[in-house]
Image (cartoon, rainbow, N blue to C red; front, top):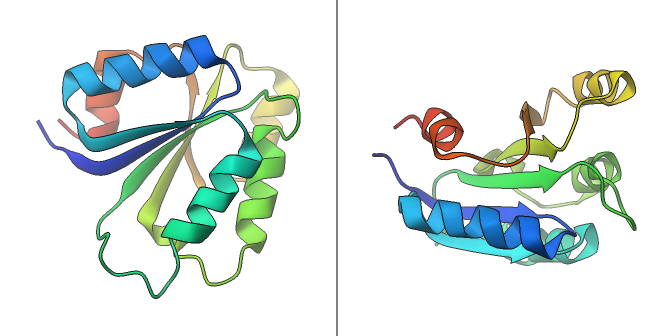
Length: 135
């Protein structure tokens, strides 16, 4: 099975993060799986590790982004990510995670199709991950 360098999980729900991180680590699909519990923490991580000048971390990383978070929802996160300067967004493949798909959410996902690959219902499962990674 293919393996990616890094998977970032951004979800305020610690149980969801734990479950998703466990699934991904048990599948051995990434060198590293990191969990961040809010958008601010994730944006800071991206700012620190995805600068255009940073070349030691090559290849695409996956970012699973929870849609519904209290301080900054997934769409707000995407807007702030787009505004970050000197960030190599091409190194991130972004998937939105949600417990359900509302009609307004679907419209908002379409507004971000330039940066979001797919909208996925929680919980992540092994078959979905295999499909996303291409394994």
